[in-house]
Length: 91
Image 1 (tube, rainbow, N blue to C red):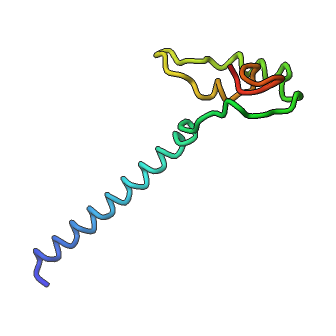
Image 2 (image 1 turned 120 degrees about the vertical axis):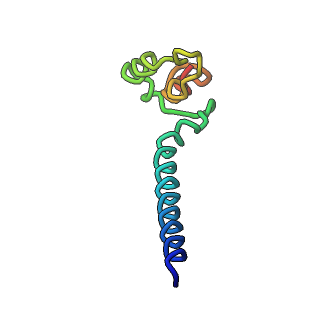
């Protein structure tokens, strides 16, 4: 094998490693965002005990929208009193 072929093989291996690192890094960075893409059920049925002062306090402390006006999925995920009685999806 001549020196140009060896150099080409080294560059290929370096590029292959770089692409592998970039792919795994992208996957790891996207992993925490995946739950935020989940939808919230408006028909979930929770026991009455789920509606207590602690959960209502948590529901009231999570803003419904961000500073830019984007809906906050976590607000709707915490039990509240909207849609289902005695306790359902947060409203």
